[in-house]
Length: 310
Length: 242
Image (tube, rainbow over all chains, first blue to last red; front, side, top):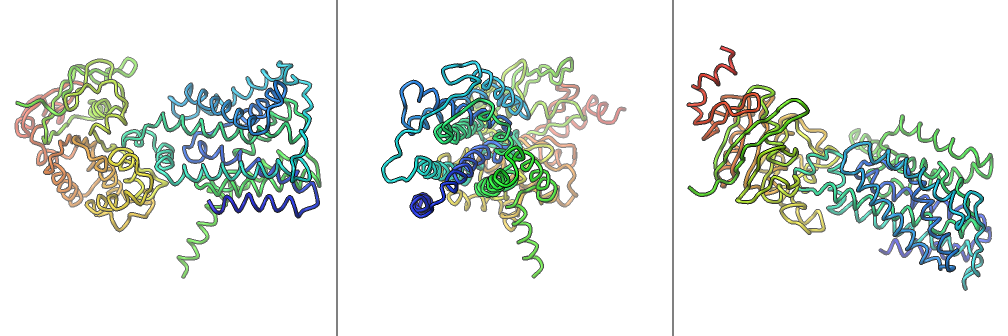
């Protein structure tokens, strides 16, 4: 709790002390990936059900905001709550259709849902269709030097919320149930774990948090179009970041997102924005080969070896 | 005679064109020790998969403690008091032994407890009964065969069942380990837990069971006291081919 408050306070202080606007522009993206990666890990890391369609959940969150702005200039908080509701329902629905079956069916469905959602958005002119749509940022709130600085602080808050929820899930009986499902679903069911209900709950929470990650995106960019909103980069990053950081703990996605998100920002500025996905792919390959348990697993292994050496 | 704890009536299960079980009826009384034997592929594991809810039977019905459970999912049956072990141990390999045992404690015995600390003491107690207390914080993936079998048993017992179904819990163990395991299961039975044991080790099943059922090709071939079943001509034929 104290850590959460301190993090948001630190973000707030940062907006007072740092001049360079780019810090907040880039920082927002990294934080957005913390939310996305943490959300993915709740289902993909703890329960072992891989979502390939995180990009769709992210984009549906963003386009929920667009629709609400277009309809009645909804304020940010309303956008976020609505986006979480819509993408949470989406997670529940995809789960209800596929999570009765074990294994890969959920993953396949998440690929399909991405295609469906993008097609819908492309053909829906109210939210800009294929051309995209410009979104005007409202007046800068009192106490902030720019609107994006406010969004930076807001995203810090969402990241803290997401990590806090993930941590609660992880250390509680819910997390042990999800891990039991990943280790052996039949055994989990046999010791009283309501596997279907637990998977659905995780899919709903995971989906809702992905929507939260995407909801402020239209305001942040001031422009949104389907190709970049549904970019493969989100889907790949959402799964690469937890894998790189380590899926066993809430800290893994945070480490992965900060590390990979920062590298992506640096690459975008210094080399090219097209290179992003390539970088993510390469880093992922290296980690899968060299540290299959992620950075956390590697650290644990090293510390154990050191302990054994003494 | 009071109503049996478990009553299986006319159970049938098909996998495609293969009939794994047909018209199997079975009862187990409160506190009884029932042995199930039969050659490989005779339907023993399918039978307990149907009783525990891992598989849904096609025909017939299952009543437990006077309640129809045929349509209930496995986790609901566990909450009612049916626990099982798996023929091939299925530990939660990424968790410690204490956490393995904590799962049924949190999901069945003490639903609503929020912290691992609340159930850890009880988990350690159950592990202690199996002689696994020293390994409580080791990962389940690192255990030896006999330890895995004991963990299966510990996890099943943690849901405080009134019916315990053991699927070849002694397979692959040495003679000494079989005796040790048998002693543990007998202790559990003394507390009033009904035990159904599937086993290939005849010495163990004959010593353990009050009543033995022999399955062959998905049907009950013989039923009776261990001595009766062992002497049965048809049982001798399927086992020895003579």
